[in-house]
Image (cartoon, rainbow, N blue to C red; front, side, top):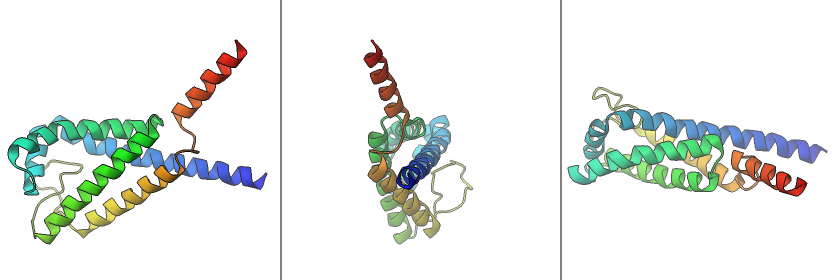
Length: 163
């Protein structure tokens, strides 16, 4: 009985971590979707991609962040959403490290596109590292944690058994 209770608590914690990570991606996407031109300016500030590809990234990336976040919050396509989160966070962290190593004085562009937003710093590397750890935890535990997708599948199977 204790083992079942412990697993249940772990499932709840993983679900909360999954939902929290999803909310981070949803919140991060909102300002970018509202003003892709300003986000493209943030992207070019990193001096990694030129303006043309930056505008394409600024148009597409926030929608990927939003869908990834919704997938995590709703518990749909959790493995795919978690893989997307891992890839995006890895790329974002590399971009931040690159900017810091080159001494760029830019704002992150993560949650707001305000020109006077807080400047990029090592705290961002720590924040991304924490979010990466959350992603790895979800990835490792998502096969057993409760999700909406698993619940709907279970309900569908139960309904077919009754017929």
